[in-house]
Image (cartoon, rainbow, N blue to C red; front, side, top):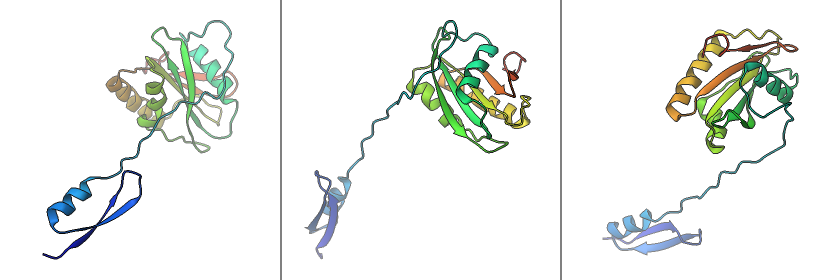
Length: 178
């Protein structure tokens, strides 16, 4: 049998070339490979001031915090508020920035921060740059998807707030849609 050349990754991460006499030795050498190691880090970037306690029990309280966080951007932003078991706010995270009329969200991105923060529940929100907080059919479908994902993860969606112009907002919970 002819000798074969086998390239493998050494313990120091550098390529090692070896001349092997048979297939089984080559197969054994190929099985050793480098596996990357990662560390996921949360990065606190600031804080908001909330009047009263940090507990959110009503849609209006969540809407005020989301409005304070978002301001009046010209495009849709999808934001997550993570709550502990006593409905105290653990943190707020911007999930995605969309276009003038849409913001794409996937449960994987929405629940990432909630999992990392050991959240007990979440409130999601997005703004409508048009100023009308009425939920679209896409908003309703996204809420159903997030609600199902939250049930699977054990992190329920407590509400979905759509932010409109000024103080206007729509609460899925308060309208019986959650």
